[in-house]
Length: 453
Image (cartoon, rainbow, N blue to C red; front, side, top):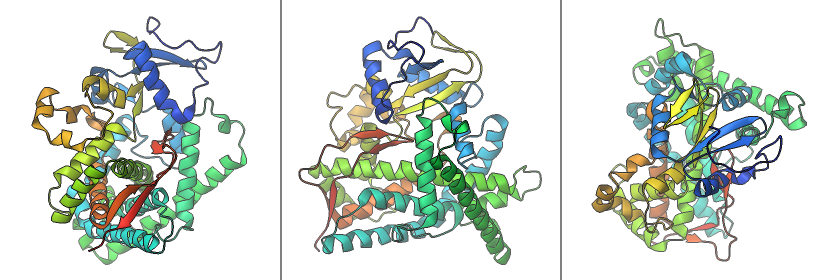
C-alpha cells in the first residue's frame, strides 16, 4: 500500500478534515487526481480507494469469506438496534441470509402488491389535494414516509399510514435513529462510547422503543398465524415468512434474529428507495421531454405490464445519482488486490459511480438520457453496461430487497407520471448531493401538477 499515490494529510490526523457531507465527491475528485487506486489516512487508519471495475467485482464476489462489512459499520448498527443480516458476517450471515431470502421471494412480494397499490393511491390523493388547495407539497418528507409505510407493511404486516400521520412516534424514532447512525458513520472517532451526549442517550431510548414495537408485531404475527394456519403456506409479509422458517426444526433461528432482520429491512428500505425516487423526480423535472415520454408510456399500460422507458429512467437516475456512490469493505485476511497487498483489517472504499464512468465513458455522460438504455448499440459497444452498474451490490451479498425496491419504484413513479406533470420549481437554489447513510438531495424543488382529463 505504501507505494500508492494519495493526498498529503496533516501530521497525526491525516486527511481527517474531509467535508463529511461531500465525502463521496472528495474521494471521486481524488480518484481523478491520483488515479483509479490510491490511499489515504484518517487518524491512525490507512484506507485504499479503488474505482477499478475488476477490483470491485473481485471484492463483491469474495464476500463474506475474504471481505466483510466494516467492523465500524457493524458496531454502529448493533448499537442502534439494527442487528441482522445487514451487519452479520460469516456463518451467521449465511444462516440469516437463507432466512431473509426465503421471506423475500417474488411470490411473497406479489401478494403484497395490492397493499402497495393502496399506499401509492393514498400518496396520490395527498399530493393532489395539496396542489388543488395551493399548498406546498412536501415531496421529500412524503417519499420517506411512503417508503417507511411500505417497508413496515412488507416487513411486519402493519399499516402505519405515516404519509398522513406526521406525528407517528415510531416514524419519529426510526428517523431519529437513522440520523444518528448516519452522523456516527462519518465521525472521525467514536466519542459516544466514552462520553454520551443527550442525543446519544436519546438514540438508545429510541432504539429500545423500536425493539419493543417490533416485539409486539412479532406477537401479533404469531397470533394471526395461529388463527389462520393458511398463512404458514402463504405468508403475507416478511415477518410471517421468517417465522415460518424459524419454526422449522433445526433452523437455528430464534425470535431475536427475526426481530433484528425485520428492523434491518425497515432501515435498509426507507432511505434508499425514497432517495432513488427523489433523484428521479428531480432529473425528470429538468428534462420535460423525458417526463412527457414517461407519462405517455405509463398512461398506455397497466403497472403490471412491461414499461421499458420507465425502467430506463430508473436506470439512468441510478447511474447519475446513485444512492450508494461508494461502498466500503474490510479485508478479513491479507488480500492481493490486482498487485496491491492489502493487510487484514484494512478498509477499501469502492467508488461505484466513478468506476462506471471509467468503464463506460459516455460522450454525453453528464446528461439525463434514459433512451440510451434502450439502444442496442450501447449494449454492444460497452459489452452490456448494465452489468457494470451495481446499485444493489453484487456477489453473494447482493441486496435481498431488490425485487421489492423495484416494485415500489415502478408502482409510485408510474402513478405520478400518469397523474401529474413533473415540473421544476422556478428559481430554486441548486440541489447538492449530501452524503449521510446514503446520497440524498439537499432539497427537492419539484412541483407535481394534477393532469386534466
